[in-house]
Length: 378
Image 1: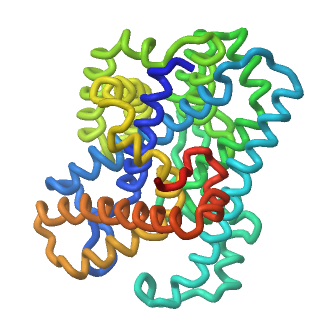
Image 2: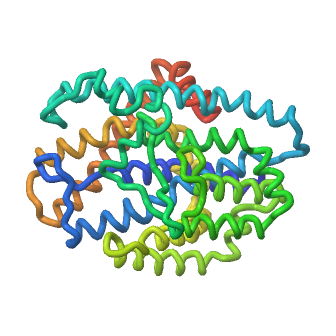
């Protein structure tokens, strides 16, 4: 792996985790209802951020994962694959199970606090509604009650169920892709750029297997990362060649996304095009503004997984409290609360991480997948 790629990836991890937090922030009324007006400054800001810019975080992580999976690969055989799978039991599977257990516990106890629901369900009904063991996979697709699935050009419904700890759908899909990595290797090795182009078209058109765990966004960007690693092409060097087209294309597509959002069925296709351009633009931007190896984002990189996995338990409470402490529907105030809820959530997660780093480093390392970036303080 080229030194520049390593530095940019390390620098990107923290801001990408922060984008995921902002993605899940809400603009709320004091009555715990999301603002649904389809106009105004706050609404436009949320579309630009949560429905636009923040949507490059997950494909960026898939790209990075594919690149790191195949980097410095001298040979590819069953033993290499089994060795990688063994390591990913610790880095992916165990954290996935542990954080979902925490998510299940959270779902069972939060209704009884009375802050977010007037009619708390019994624990048994929560398990029945979400499908018992399916809470570790797609939670019986309960999320589709407020986040309807998309329908592609072929009329196929593309479901979007998530596990009990919602953001961990990325880890779920990454585990599946890792299991299919031998096929990814063969595909990338032989199909090369043409194969990636076909995957990109399928991604834009949302044509793929209509089941959770086999997302086209995961297979496309993981395969793209694999392509750069297998053929020893530097991410930064390759993306720099299309630096300005990535910036201009991202800006135009973001404007089109704001214009089309919620008004017609073209939004999903505009968003996927934006993600393609936006991921490249994000790497180019990081490479341009990154300052040295000891800059703030690089120092905070080790907390990125913890922020990603834990923020969902905090952000909803923060947005609720801010709606109570700072009532009012002034557009500027709503936008401020939206951004503040994400900032406060990130600060709390970072604070808890640093505290755990001091008092229970071994446990922290375990729940974060024994990642080598969980370092001792010195």
